[in-house]
Length: 116
Image (cartoon, rainbow, N blue to C red; front, side, top):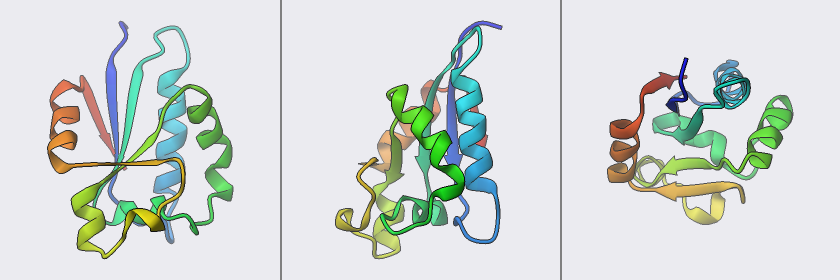
């Protein structure tokens, strides 16, 4: 399999499920191995709650650490944040805010989109 650009979207709140941790684990897997795919991680809808600075990330810390070492950043959709009354000051340091138009561009260039 040749190298692909994979977009991971996180649409579910990080409460009561393992979606956010499993998604990050899958993203780490996509960045390793022979092909070392390029990856983008975008938080949309209720998924943006994971990007808050006070969220417990204990379960996902090692995956986040691996992604950070690889130069990957978490991205949160501005419009999803605004709809939930979340400001940039509420976000963790490792989160980049992008517009819905930027999300659409990521979808367009992705060879594969995986939703969590």
